[in-house]
Image (tube, rainbow, N blue to C red; front, side):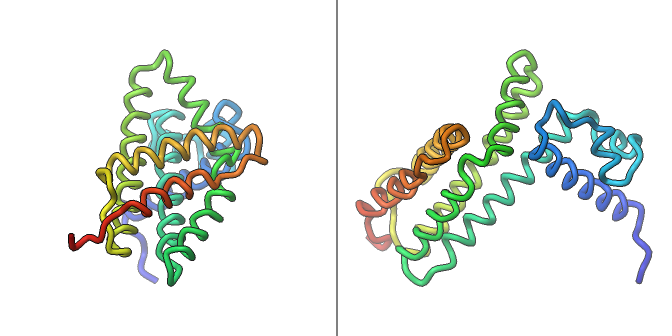
Length: 201
């Protein structure tokens, strides 16, 4: 087996640190997770963490990016897996019920939002992260409607923002009360699809 180059080794170390930090942040929260704890859990020195990340906020932002990317992949699999539109919507519904309101994820996002109140740099970074999440949602929705051969009655960007906003708001509520159904997100998408037009028109 060929020996890893320096850049490959650094990339592997960074990925391992991010994955370890993700697990700790989701389990214990932002405040309770120190860089020392991440280093120990990952099997590295604290210096290895600081050689890859400026501070804990930067590491956590990387973790949020990984989480958003992973959730996007899960949604893509749900919306692309069934043979019929209804099967795919039900798969998305199952994902929403399982994921929206995940306490670890929801609270981690909130901890960063609270910290950003007096940290303009962090607020800007979170704004950028939200922008990426919105772009992921737009891409997923466009791919889904294209596969169905329909055009939504509103711009895809607006529809995606609506669905994302519903998901975020519902996630907050479900983190407190998990008995709340996540079906409203899927129903909103169904309404949009019901008034869509064939793409060839």
